[in-house]
Image: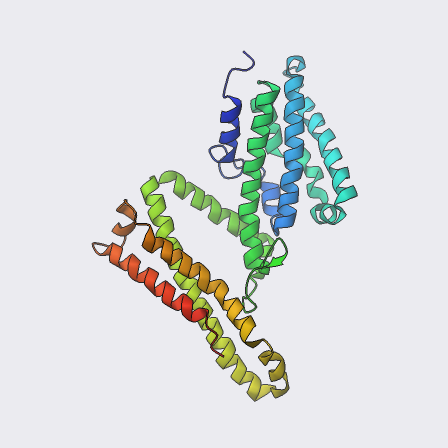
Length: 317
């Protein structure tokens, strides 16, 4: 009877999306908000949680015949605390920078509801193999959630991804995104997106995402064109008027730098537009939003996106 319930494969798959710890169960909110200012810290936290969850699940499953109902939470907590201590010491020894960056949030894994929940729901009732599969699935789901929040916050807030520069030089860093308000804003929007996807049919989801992608591509292309115009003409003119000696430094950006930075906008716009043109959807839902001529409207948006994106890829200086 101990192994009655979902199989190991079902436990694994459920942890990814249907029972995602963050977007479905709303567990582990503290690290999701606190350590997602960058991908490095987020993935380090995800790795630490995965190590603790896997070890705790397997050990609790092995000793499940010995668990007493009135002591089980205490046993869960002591078991988790043991592996959290190991993870904390390993990080301090081999990744001191990440250990310093995460600070108290590694010890706080002890009270992470994701781990306690899985010990109670799965490990204390099923075999070690199923408990291990459950731990891997939940860990991957947790890592996916952290990555989704951290990637948005780091790219928009710092212009980087895993510390590598991703956005062009003219991109204005959104400082609020790497601050606490940015964490709440990003998580709230992603939770809303997850709930919207869950409430819609596949046709509506595909249609909504397709049209949204084209509109975003067009908007970003227009933004890039406007930013380039402002940088080259308005700012350049102001520098000539106010502080001529700095013009040589500004002009040193050069043709290659401008072309490279604006191709980062042009290429995604062109790719999204081409995908929209080449893959004709069998669903009518995407075009209902634009009335009878919805398909024509989407095609015009795609073609315009290509044109504007191409203009952004050509420097105006």
